Image (cartoon, rainbow, N blue to C red; front, side):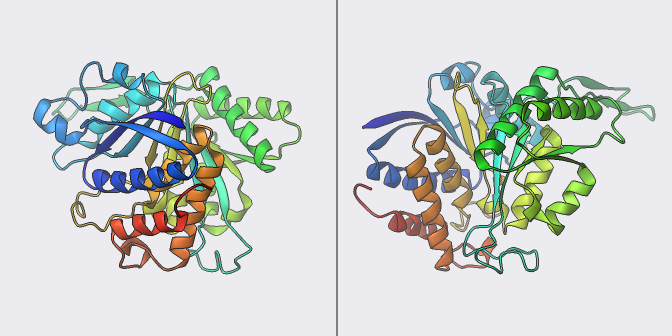
Length: 358
C-alpha cells in the first residue's frame, strides 16, 4: 500500500464542497490501486483572516513542508481584499516551495460543448494543449510602492522581476514537456511594447530553442495570442508564458473548453525537493456557496494531476476517463447546462471508476 501524506486546505466558499468531492474520488481511485491518503486538514482561509488577522499561522509553511503534496480548494471571502488571500497564502506557498511551474491543461472533454462554434463537432478532432505558466516571479512582484496617498499627486509603482534562472527553468520544463508530447512550444510575449523584460524573455526562448532542435517553436504577442486561443486553438500544444500572461490566458482557455469550473492546475516543484500544490482554477464563488451546485470537476481533475505527480499515472488517467464518461452521459452541473448537484457528479465519477482492484 502506497500512503501519501496530503495537506488539505479547503479554503472559502465552495472550496469545502468541491474538496469533499475531490477527496471522495481520490479515495475511490486509491482503493483500486493500493493507494491510501493520510489527510490533514487546515482551516487557513479568508474566513480565518477575518477573525484572526492572518491567512495562516506564522509557522504554516514549516508545517506544510512535511507533506508529500498540498491539495487546495479555493480562497476568497466577502470583505477580504483579493490581494490579501493571494499574498497571505498562495504566493508564500508557491515561492517557499519553489513551485515555479503552474501547469494548466486546456482540454475539451468528451461530452462538453465549447462556446466556440464548430470546436468539438468532430469527435476525432480533440482540443488538447497545455499552458506552462511561470509561477514565482515576473509581474507578480513585491517591488514597488505608493506615494502621496489621498492627494492629486498620488502615484503607484509596480516593478516586474524577470531573472535568467527563473525564465530558463520554466522554459526548459516547457520544452521537455513538448518533447514528451511530440509537439511544439509557443511563447507568449509583448516585446514590442514592454522594452526590457519581454525582449529578455524572447532572447532566452531563442537560446533554449537551439538546445531543442527537434521542437518546433513560435512566439506571439499576447494580444494576438489571446485572439488565436479563440480563433484557432488547435494550433497549440505547449504554451509558455510569464506569470501574468499565463494567468490570463488560462482563464480564457478554460472558457474556450466550456467552463472555468472544470479547469485544473498544478503548482509544481519539478525537482520534487518540496511539496507541490494542486488546485482548481476557479475561485471561491461565494454567491453559490452552500447551495450544492458547484462544479467539482476542476477539483477532481486537480486531484488526478496530484496522483500523476506522485507517480500513479494509471490511476490519474482512470479519473480523467471517468470524468469524461460522466459528462458524456449528461451528468453535469448548471455551469455546463445541467441540473446535477456537486454530490451527484462526484458520486457518478466514483461509480464510473468502479470498485475493487484495477
